[in-house]
Length: 575
Image 1 (cartoon, helix red, strand yellow):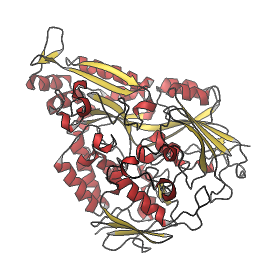
Image 2 (cartoon, one colour):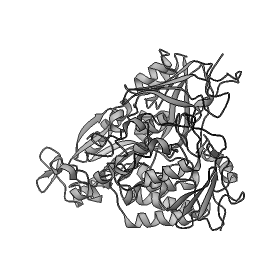
Image 3 (cartoon, one colour):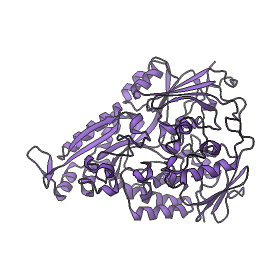
Image 4 (spheres, one colour):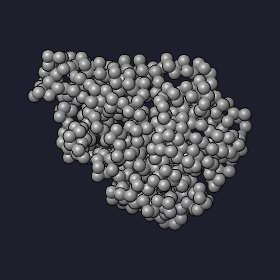
């Protein structure tokens, strides 16, 4: 079999696969630990929990990344680098069995939790048990699929034993989405209790550069420096505040105009607006292209409010309009993606027909026809499906109007995108009710909130997602049958359209067992095409990651393959 991603060699040669543009300032003198005062960060989508296993979305994962850490993470080039591990296991160094059924991680010696207790292999085993426990509703459960057991051979050695050969074993405990939790703190939070352990979820004990000092959900997180942090000269800031709320525009003004914050995240703004803000001279954009795509998700289940607990679940029955693939395809055909990208994203957006737009070897060309809108073909599909124009121009079938509800987060660009889509679909005879809610709510993990993306109490919703690292196996597994959110999983899960295909799941299983870059990329492209051609996930724009950093801030580089705050311990203030 051809060698695959199990070696650092491949990951190094993969540099050409990303167009990351690092915004680094000139070299400055090394600051002493904690000597740069407070760091102010603006995440306009505020964190609702500091436990990534209850969310999986960026605002919570990043807020937690200052505190809890994985064994390894991806750098801005998509290269896997050790963090709590001493090295990256490979076949060459004996860390991966020849038959690929086991990976052995050696932990970095001398690491302690922020409370001073020792970090050991038992904490790693516990984290696996915690996420996979019955009834847990763990947001990262698919990261542990295929694992037979996790064993602590000694305090510094972990064996992850797989149920079958696993050529790409770098998913569990890798990247900011699957950090290690302290067993002593979370041992009483198993199974159905996972979401109710408020004290633990709001202030996890970690091994990272900071510890939680104060947390107000959906508002602000205040961190203090972790005195037990393993790097003697880091972090450079004595404290960090991540402020939430507002919108992308208010965040941008805070860094580019008023200077109230040092770093502002996810500035999804029109290009002319961003250019004007940048001209103030107080800050600089920090950008990179990874695999981020702005998507539409089409709900295959019935979101009717009369269904009660069965609303937007498989048990509640199929969507009365969107269960017909001809309707879904018609909606996609009508969209002018190039216009959306040019008008709303400028050089930070490219029209996309793929769920996976990067790295290059994973990119399919089978769906490129979507780049040319075809309203005539879309109308023909709706006619074929039995939807006829009514007296008001809105199509009807069996006494039902072709009327859709469309939900997304509050954002100027997203509301403009909604308005453009509404006009494209109006030409077809489709009526659309537009709605938006605060990003802190929409992307939250509160199982009791009706407005989250997981609940999906609408026909269509829109947001951005992307892979962690260059390999696409874990990312594409977001749309397996097992990943559908429901009350059984406490509304955790990543398969928002409720797409369930045995054929797709079979290819997913095949990918897990397949070695070799060429063969794996072929299967990944096949999964991409199955999703796109199901018209349940409709890609719109391949987006660049863009944030803003004060010119006084050193050491900041955009990481499109992991948490944006991946190296916050190394950030410092220019002197």
